[in-house]
Image 1 (cartoon, protein in one colour):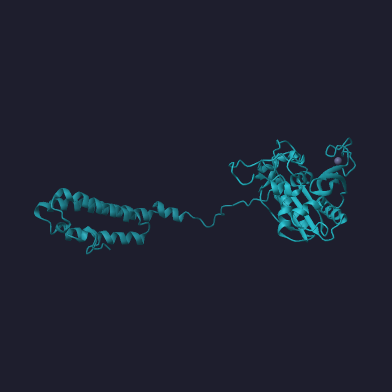
Image 2 (cartoon, rainbow, N blue to C red; image 1 turned 180 degrees about the horizontal axis):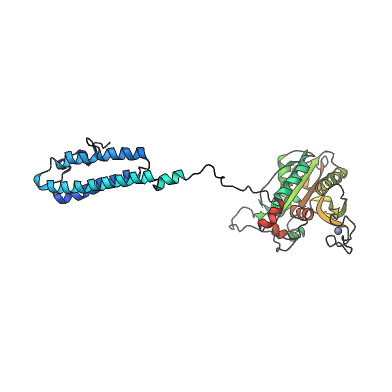
Length: 377
Ligand SMILES: [Zn+2]
């Protein structure tokens, strides 16, 4: 209900109105209050309250104006107040009637919007996405290694040269650094150390051994970066899973047995594995693991005759590098190289996914084309 602050509950003399031309702003103020209130009356109960508040015979706003403004007005003002009141009454009555019709006919927009919700209609479907193929392959690999006692650790993609190279037995000017063309961060000249985007997941071997004493059995899934020009088999960003196992009595047999178990779980029990001597600065001896060609069954011959294009007739496909941890690496993490031994491997996930799912272009992993991705959802 109108309160004491309301101008319609006071006389014109109280409001300091002495001239007819002061009246119009008063009536305008009252009118805009009415407009605001009637616009909020969207249903019959609200409409009723608004009507009583404005047209109620005893204490409606128009009755108040009659009592407080018109009756006590000076003879000079009376005519102007009467004219203003009549105009206001006409507007209030016609709008209240118009609003009643609108509510009754259901054409009131706000009321309609409320009623338009049809609960019998089906809801809005929100399609749930699926994991990217790379993420799925990560999970496959994690599950296989979980089952033989490995756990997952993750590490920073921005690394120091110490963790990415030096502690892995790759001193400055080592030729291997040329093979890992590296992105360095553009830092201020006075930065305490250069920073780079890790070129492999191997820094986490060091970070893990710094924090844990043997036995250590971890895999490290993650993104790595090299300054390669993009083509069907190269990308400046790709994915690796690093593996590291260190304990008091780990032998070369444990190493090859673990890798073979993984490969057969991942590609199927029918595949064969072999390893060839190789070189990595942080493993000794180092090997390159091959799997029998999954496209020609290791025969080197394509299904319709002729040479298998995937293994180029060799019957074997290069999988990834691995080896026994070089004792020099233990020196960087305060492990006793005389007492511990272990193995490490680094697998290219994109390559494994391409082999397993018959994908011939690494770029499709990064193009986010749903027509490609949907095949693996
Ligand atoms: Zn083949």
